[in-house]
Amino acid sequence: MKNSSFLLALCCVAGISAKPTAARGQSIVNGGFETGDFTGWTQGGNYAASDVVVPPNSINDAAHQPHSGLWQGWFGANPTSSFLSQSVNLAAGSVYKLDFWLANPIAGTASFQVDFGGATLTNSLTQGSSLSSFPYQEFSYSFTNLPAGPTELKFTFENTPDWLLLDDVSITRQSVPEGGPGIIFPLLTILGLGFYARVSVKAVLKA
Image (cartoon, rainbow, N blue to C red; front, top):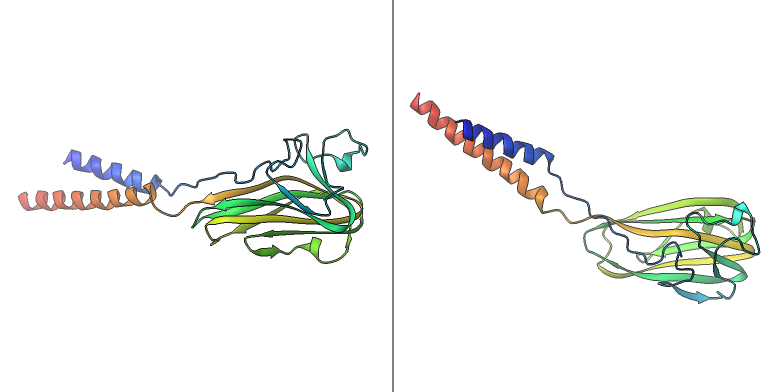
């Protein structure tokens, strides 16, 4: 009887404490541009003025410093669009989080857009041609039910008076399909309860 009680307690603890594990992984190559160039990225459009910059530079002030590390992407200064893209391989049934940091040191005619998973992400930066100045700000988006396989992440920039600054781009896999230990341990709990109940009935009949 003591052995059956111990089995029940063990199974119940396992069933309560076990949860489906979350798998986290970085899918972007060179998201902080710390290689000192655009390794892992594809450039297009009018990108002649785009660069990966490490301070000190010709413009060396607090407003133009990287968000983290030594390097960051500078995009501008020109009146026509340039873009930066990267293909990301996604797994089926997962939740993904896109995160990046953007700054616009000098107010003026500028626009910014990000596309991912076949959709254009709308925000205040795409609503007009005039963009106020702001320090590095974080932008985050979550995605579910994206198709498995290669998916393009694309940034589009346009800035006439200065540069838009981009840093610390990441796409993180937040979760995986259900299964594994999260299913097994609850089953053990049920089996343990059944075993304990059977032993208890026998004990009552013998009494």
